[in-house]
Image 1 (cartoon, helix red, strand yellow):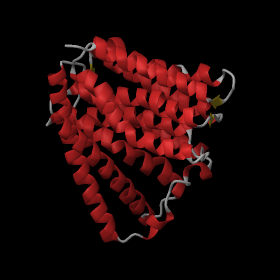
Image 2 (cartoon, rainbow, N blue to C red; image 1 turned 120 degrees about the vertical axis):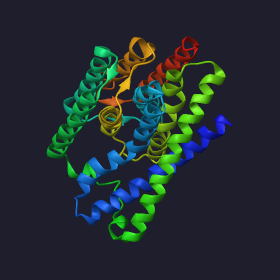
Image 3 (cartoon, rainbow, N blue to C red; image 1 turned 60 degrees about the vertical axis):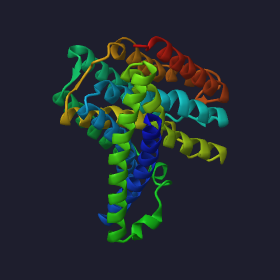
Amino acid sequence: MSVLWVILGFILLVVGGEYLVRSSVALSFKFNISKMVIGMTVVSFATSVPELLVSLQAALSGSPAIAINNVVGSNIANIGLVLGITAMIGAIAVDKSFYKINWPVMMLFSIVLYYFLKNDNVLSAIEGGILFVGLILFLILLIRNAKKDAYIKDIDDALAVVSNFKIFIWLLIGATALYFGSDWLVKGAREIAVAIGVSEAVIGISLIAIGTSVPELAASVIAAAKQEKAISLGNLLGSNIFNISSVLGLTALIKPIPVTETQILTSDIFWMLGFAAVLIPLIFLPKMMEFSKLKGLALVIAYGIFMFLIFTQGKI
């Protein structure tokens, strides 16, 4: 039954996330917000809501390890799985904004998160607030430096003429699906952890993290298969920044998140930092400023090693 809860939870999160993005974009058009700002802020935040609700549900239901490792694991999966598999399908070009803005900011947020957790073994409301304020400053920086065309290609113009009633229905469907999806996913994941004898931290960094990264992986693989050049490394790094600053930041503002599993600080978070840090040397290896198929394969292999170690070392 626990597997069924997890599957149903994943399905509802995907459905809820899709309807939330649609309604958010349509609502933004009603307020005459530019497509560029919608793409950079509204869509980015809406796609992080499933992770936010899973982490919040986990924190409120007494599973803080799932709350933290959902984010840590999603960030690792975004690089190891999503970037790795996408690059294996077709090489991804790297622009200057990668090492001038996105990568340094991602590393900064990752290191600050580690410091906050290591300092007193809890992510407090004040620290969550600092992370969220940091996100707002990052978005202001992005908007000021943005190339308009880079952020409007995924915005559907048809959403500009959607009726208020339809927007309300979409919001209702999205909110309901996300609420029950997050609840069922956390419930099922906790039962699976007990059944197979691993910690909740292991389930959070593996099963839940991969699940919340599946929509992004699917979108990237489809785009790569169609040989669309719209795949942006910046979007993946931006997702990692949002996961730390909005998902953990807002969750900590509502309920401080204690560190209850030692491997979060002794192992898991170092894997997250490692996957992030290795991107810099990779882009300067031949071929420079490109994630080739070989580099993608290396990332996927590294992710496979990470998962193997997580399960072999994570027994209770």
